[in-house]
Amino acid sequence: MFGRSSRKIDLPSMPATLARIIQITNKSDSTAEQLSKTVMLDQSLSTKVLRLANSAYFGRRNKAENITEAVVTLGFGSVRNLAASASVVEALFPKRMFPGFNWQDMWSHSVTCAVAAESIYSCMAGHVAGNNESAFLAGLLHDVGKLIIARALPQRFLQIVEACRDYNFEMVRAENNILSTTHCKIGFDLAQQWDFPEKISAGIAYHHIPEDACEHEDLARAVHAGNLLAKRLGKNYVVGVPVDVSINDVAEAAGLPPGDINFIVDQVRGKLQQCGELLAWGDRMPCQRNAA
Ligand SMILES: [Fe+2]
Ligand SMILES: [Fe+2]
View 1 (cartoon, helix red, strand yellow):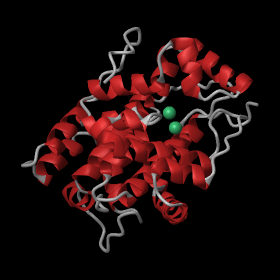
View 2 (tube, rainbow, N blue to C red; view 1 turned 30 degrees about the vertical axis):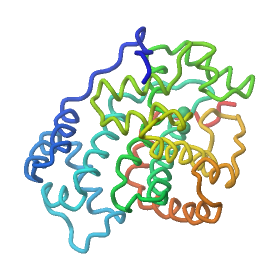
View 3 (cartoon, protein in one colour; view 1 turned 90 degrees about the vertical axis):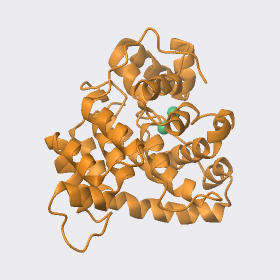
View 4 (cartoon, protein in one colour; view 1 turned 180 degrees about the vertical axis):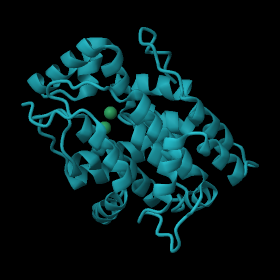
């Protein structure tokens, strides 16, 4: 894959709870009790796990009363996704605003891409529904390199945003011009450092060039198409820069017929309503709604 591209950037270390959760969820003989014990060490994660298990998304008849029940309802993959999402929001999202860039809209773009990538991946030949947490997580984290740039090199990040606004560049192009690297490469370095499964690292690394992802091309393609669909459905977080993505563009990127994408759009809209719990985390981010 890439050589280490963020040598000049200090990558934050992985929060201890997440490291332990990844370790447990990667082992085939781990039990729900082991996982729930680790979750319980983190109070804010425990609350999130309980709330998500009892949300509309999982449609339980009776309330999950304790963490073990909640972990069983969610499944290992979803607990890992939730822990990783919480870590990204808590450990990586910058606390400051940048003129012309909206963190809330970026979070909503990331959640939409996660849901869309999961739906697209399950629609691709040979992928069974319900086994697509990797696509969700890769979709959620595909742009995590942008957070790293904003935190580590705020002045450069501002220049990148300005270049996007002034020249209508995609961020990946502006990053290449200004930093000689991209959020894809930096996101890949972080995923490696945080010990994410290779599939997820590849989804992040190749979300703009899925054809280069070798054996993980399907997943990278799902994230690539999910990213386009999220752009079509949401607001651009680089304020004032128009994005023009058609259903046909998404279909072509996914390698699926446009009719399937229309079906996926309905599915994504429904799932996003159920993902209110995750989307609401964006309300706690610095907001730059009217910076034109
Ligand atoms: Fe990207
Ligand atoms: Fe994106």
